[in-house]
Length: 67
Image 1 (cartoon, rainbow, N blue to C red):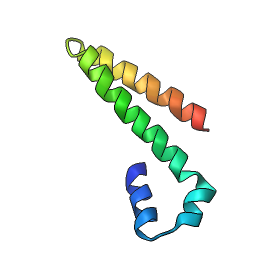
Image 2: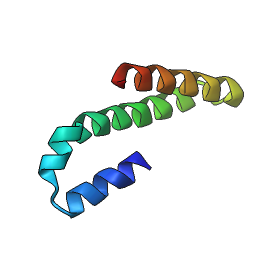
Image 3: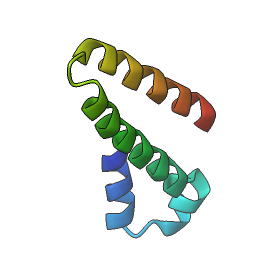
């Protein structure tokens, strides 16, 4: 969802709004979470429930860091 918002900002050339709200920083954090999700999925393929719990806790920590 946040990624979709970023695309809308870019599409409408609202660079000033991106800078004000730190969209580039948010986008970087989204990419980091997606990358971690892939890594964790590979590591825990035998234990999907555990992997999903870990992904969620990492995402929550990163969101708290952003706030």
